[in-house]
Image (cartoon, rainbow, N blue to C red; front, side):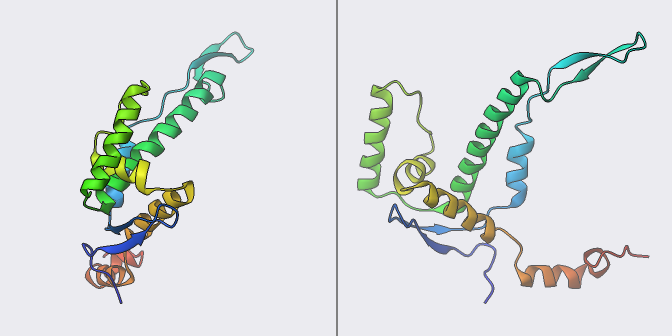
Length: 171
């Protein structure tokens, strides 16, 4: 049985216990998130070629760049996770859920931890429904698997564009 593109599938957080619905998220959305957040450029370093010629070249191994890349990778992962939850999870917060989220927001504010995620669904899933790192990993993996083309979609594309799919350009 093949799922339709907009069909919802149930997902239960094993450790958090909450059940949500999962829907397909276009891989292009994830690519746009990545494209909209380019990595930091490495610092330029003067390189002496020994013949009196010196040239500036990027140094990706510079400690400051390595530190910046680590921060970049963390932020990119957070942005992709937000998008996957916001567009891949369907769940209606109950009054109890909203109260729990309010308590978390209050705690955040009281402890001057900055601003908590603005989107209620993303905040609730991230800070309440997900009970462990395993829950997070399983959710993201499930959404990503759900977002891959189905065998039926690949077959239909092959029928519509046989030369393109099979790797031989049209004559």
